[in-house]
Image (cartoon, rainbow, N blue to C red; front, side):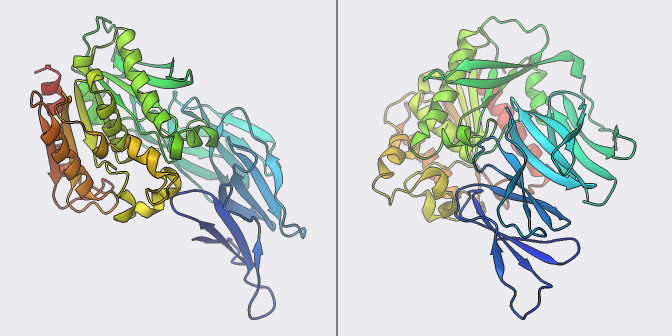
Amino acid sequence: FGTAVTRDGRYLVIAVVRGASDKAEVFVQDLKAPGAKPSLLPFTKGLTAAWDYLGESGGRFYFRTDQDAPLGRIAAVDLAGGALTPVAIVPQGSHKLASANLVNGKLVLQWLQNASDRLEIRGLDGRLEKSLELPALGTVAELNGEPDEPEMFFSFTSFTYPTTPFRYDFASGTLSAFEKSQAKVDSTAYQVSQVFYPSKDGTKVSLFLVHQKGLAKDGKRPTLLYGYGGFNISLTPAFSASRFAWLERGGVLAIANLRGGGEYGEAWHEAGMLERKQNVFDDFIAAGEWLIASGYTNPSKLAIQGGSNGGLLVGAVMVQRPDLLGAVVCQVPVADMLRYHLFTVGRYWIPEYGSSENPQQFPFLYRYSPYHNVKDGTGYPATLVATADTDDRVAPGMAKKFAARLQAASDGKRPILIRVETKAGHGAGKPVSKQIDEQADVYAFLLKALGEV
């Protein structure tokens, strides 16, 4: 359950969701209506679409929804006018509507265009007033402002643009950096590009590439391929200081926008969930094959990395295509797809993955479950499995038994290691000192495994 109260204190807005899904039912209660028990008014019924409450103005409630719009749209319910049926304000466009806010009596819309953000300011009637010019192709995050205040703030980042807070003044229409980053990176030394490659079934998939300018395509570049592919989460350009330890040594960073993510709307997400999860692994494998075919790297120099659902991704890919890879970094993985729902908050992921207790879903979960598809005597790539002893999101036992199974099955020619952090969890809120230690271990492992040191 999620709740909000309108700024005048009159209405209570209640959103009801099930599990990790964003599908919601929305109810509103007039807290100042006569009577001891004011009724709950249903704005939406059935957990069939996402409904993200933005704010209220003059008795009109604004929402971002994907109802009849897989890429997202803005709708409003005019309670003051006696209506309970949502009406269209901003229709679905050609790109995903990633988020929306009600600031300064305006709608601030964040569009995701080929995995990079765009910002628009529109009136409450949906009319376009201004498109904001951002510093580069990148990511807008933490946008916030009050419905009746003349300013808003957000952070902006890209692969070579350090995360920087910005302030927008609605009165003057000016956008300015609120504070400069202290990161010392020569962005002119690096090249960022976006390509599209075909997956196994011909679907075009986006791939970001970051590397030093003038890179030789000799097929020998150490290349780190990163992915996630799930839960409607989008991988967009973001600055990471630790990744420059890789880039400065001539490494290539590749980030794939796989099905299952949110980069291209709900249809893209649904194409990588439940019985369609193999699409995600096929997309990732195809990315590796494209990097090799395009002359960036070769199997002995290709590494893959992912965490959480991304740990499931790299775990599944390494057991399906060990011949494609030189190294794997598998962090806090969902590795046992038959039992994941029995531990910690795993039961909330059933809408995304399915459950082995469902006879129709057991077969496809068993077919790709990393732990259950390890084969004895296989030459698996050098692997670092990482977890933390108090991870209360993905049970650390899954990482431990996956590593143990790999160690028992491996032909012994490459290391299969496990790293267990103490006094830490899934990752959020981890102290900087622990982050540094972990990143140092990851890159030391990768450079050694790929023969770079």
